[in-house]
Amino acid sequence: MKVFKFGGASINNAERIKNISGILKSYQDEKILVVISAMGKTTNALEKVVEAFYKGEKEEALQLFENVKQVHLNLANELLKQPVNQINDFFTEVEWLLHDKPVKDPDYYYDQIVCAGELLSSSIVSAFLHSEKIKNIWIDVRDIVRTDDNFRDANVDLGFTQNKINEIIIPAFDTTNIVVTQGFIGSTDENESTTLGREGSDYTAALFANMMNAESLTIWKDVEGVMNADPKEFGDAKFINALSYDEVIEMAYYGAQVIHPKTIKPLQNKNIPLYVRCFLNPDAEGTIISNKNVHQLPPIIVLKQNQVLINLNSKDFSFVGEKPMSRLYEIFAELKIKPNLTQNAAISILICMDDHHEKIEKLALKASEIFDVQMEKNLTLLTIRHYNTNIINKLSKDKTIVLEQKTKDTIQMLMKRLDQSKTY
Ligand code: ASP
Ligand code: MG
Image 1: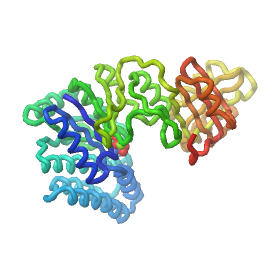
Image 2: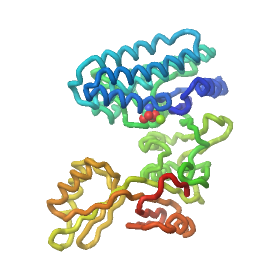
Image 3: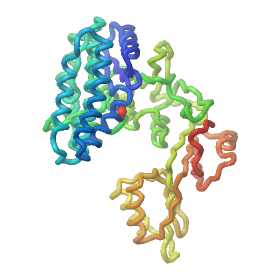
Image 4: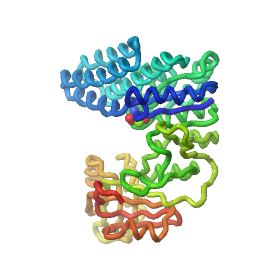
């Protein structure tokens, strides 16, 4: 059994959905669990619906939802002779909710509305596969993936979910080779919809691969595979054909937007290989990510924009000992802050973090009880794994570096903002 995950770009229009059906046809005799995310930018569009609804702008919310609805109706129309009745139920569920007054937590509404994206896209894909004589069973993943009620970033109940997979998904494969379901969404024990955090479909697919003991997971993307840098920023980005799980975890940690960071662990635990392949070129092998160590990797480059450097100075010039340090880490925990880089000196601490305006204000306020606080904004954090002198020189040339850290494998340089419109 294999798990295939198709992301937003792979189902963005009728042509691309036909393309997926072509890919599935080439795996005719295999059992495949297909995990689908929302079409194109649907999740962003639904987020706008939620915002308007929560502000009390009911008409605006309904109008914005109408647009999402039309996109899906047009797509279904273009692909199929008959209407996909199921999608009307999902439209109605959201519209009913939009007629209510927002009285609960915004994250609760977010999940009830945003989950529609995956339900709609997967229903259309499943119907189209049927019309192409590709037998498949569509399953509402909310009947399978049970989560807590931490809306917008829900945690999966692994035991319950495993039982449902055994009870529903595994037997489904007795009568079909293809099961189509959704990524990113789940539900609570009270049947409220939940979401697992943006870009969470990769994670859902990895959980399924783990719980079904799949032979592999393939994530189909619009790029050749994993590159050593973001090709939008680095004109000479190189394709990498093999990586270890550990390398990918490191890349994700430093901010590479390859794969959702939670994806690797479920695969690594059962030693299931992950393929990242291009749906536009299904004959190409793509990148394989597995437990094999890969030597001689090219330098791997990750840029994180919008960084802030916070300089905390001890108020009375006394050394920064364990007490203020532990208070500082308490503050991080209270505010759920994950610094990207820290450095200690005798009477000061430097912290580099993402520029989350609200969190920084709160951090500055709390830290000012023990430190003098200074801040520098608009910085870029450049991380290079497997660096060499050439690449460091090339990427740091003419840049002002405000902080640098180096280990055997990795160098990080915090710089004055790099021009985002330029490629390197
Ligand atoms: N549709 C969701 C998002 O855009 C989940 C995903 O694509 O993985 O974040
Ligand atoms: Mg996506």
